[in-house]
Image 1 (cartoon, helix red, strand yellow):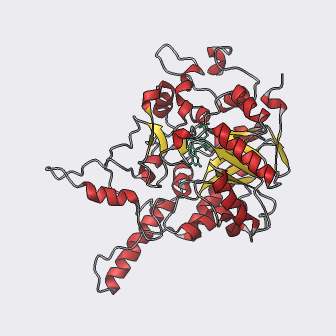
Image 2 (cartoon, rainbow, N blue to C red):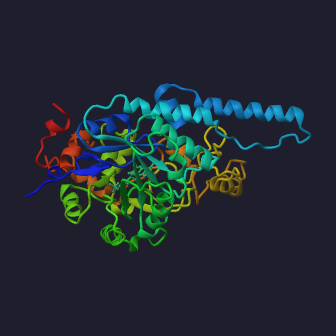
Image 3 (cartoon, rainbow, N blue to C red):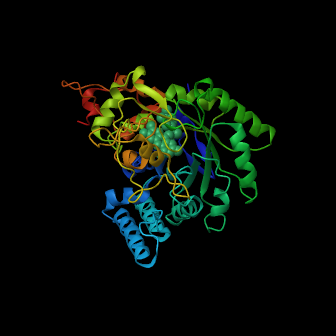
Length: 427
Ligand SMILES: Cc1cc2nc3c(=O)[nH]c(=O)nc-3n(C[C@H](O)[C@H](O)[C@H](O)COP(=O)(O)O)c2cc1C
């Protein structure tokens, strides 16, 4: 019987094992995880969410401090010259600094790559970053400058993204993919991509069981990954287009992978199982919460200021917080006019009798909380993680390595039931 590792995905002329690790922000799919996947012949994504803040954490740069400093300086300059004291300026990113951060973050991983796999970057359109079009252009082109093998366009329609990269010398050789949840969205993207004389090299079809933000409305539970994949495969065929299709969301083991490969998928994209590996950027507390999760702990919520539903654990520390909006140092969620849903909700929440801010119930400061790993987003199959690894005597789940999980998906090894505890802890 064929195993996953007997298949190959051909994406933009390169051959990989048919397994992609999806981008997990913010720095959950770390450089270490991505490099392991590339070494083993698979594809993995860095997420380009909040890259300046991630650079500060990983490389000791000062992008966030500089942004705050520039903002304060501009405000005080304006106060000196203007008759409008206290006029609020929108805290904007400096495009040059953003480009430096994006290039540094991605080049650092690209330069260390060994093996035939791919280092890709996942670019979320919905992160408005205060100047959606300008910053998106910087994020995309800086990723190409940094030598990334591929760019996956996610969380948005991306109707301008291909044009924004079209003048880059690598535009025709870098692999470009789109993440969609319906043929309708894909059709709109294909129409705009066609104007650049280049179609995507692959299509990730993300279903309703995925982690992160969902490309569905409140009716997410009525959709099914198999049906959406089949619909997209059929429509592409009818249009005479041969573009590799890569389903994502709830694909938990080698058997699931084979199901989709036999159905005509070129590869699959997975994430939740890697969120609890040793190489994942999530803190141990969150990883253990993932392992312990039961069905009742997992919710699909509308708290994200992006406007997309997000699946997360009920116990996520971000929920019902009342942190003051962090738009001056961060501000990744602000639109071009300086609006963010959290800021409005925070201002409307009011204060207690003692003068303390009241909890903000219906939304969260995503910039603050996701950067601090307080937003425990996960796929619906998080509840199955507990069956994949053993626990030690204190009841702590033992973290698998990225390599072990990759080998399970490729059908080369089975979860811990067959492997020993000694193997899990690497002794
Ligand atoms: C912890 C976590 C963070 C994620 N972050 C992002 C992200 O920043 N951008 C994005 O487009 N998708 C994100 N996703 C979605 C994944 O890239 C992937 O497509 C999906 O989770 C696959 O489904 P699975 O988790 O059931 O395997 C995230 C998923 C998880 C579990």
